[in-house]
Structures are given as C-alpha cells and as structure tokens.
Length: 108
Image (cartoon, rainbow, N blue to C red; front, top):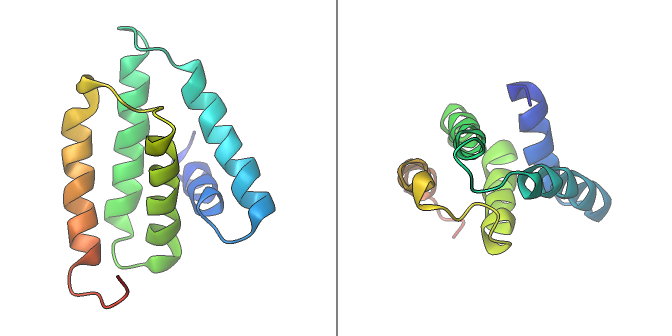
C-alpha cells in the first residue's frame, strides 16, 4: 500500500459507518491473513506496522486520523493477525505513540 491509500483504509476501517468499517477492515485482514510467519513474510508485517506508526506519528493529536487508527489496530490485535516476537520493537514504538496521543486529554 502507498501511504495515502493506507491512511484512507485505516481511517475507514476505524470509522463510524458500519459499511465502510467492515469493507476496509476486511481488506486489511485479507492482506495480513495472507502473510505467514516465515522469514520472507515477517519483513512485510514489520513494514505494515512501521507504516502504521509513521502515519500515527505524523498525525498525533489529529483525532480524525488517530482515533480510527487506534480502533483499527485494536481490531487487528484482537484478531491475532500481528502477534509475533519479531514485531516487538514496532509495538514498543506504537505504545509510545499511544501514550503521547492520550497524554493531557480529557476524552478517556
């Protein structure tokens, strides 16, 4: 995915309308489901999470992007599509971004 397309898919898959949420989340799940935990596929999963983090970092405090982004990641993590020890570093970065996003907010 290119970054702009990926941003749109993330915004839609964590959005409010059920039809766009389901369709765009299905696209991400099908993509991730196709990736196996092999030496060839792990870099693709890493790049997926890195792009996620990059979009998150570039849009901190922009709730239009970050709220759907966090909802999307919650759905993907709940479905166990991204569990792999090779991704720990990327998830530590994502955790830091979440902390920055929610610090000093009253919407929790």
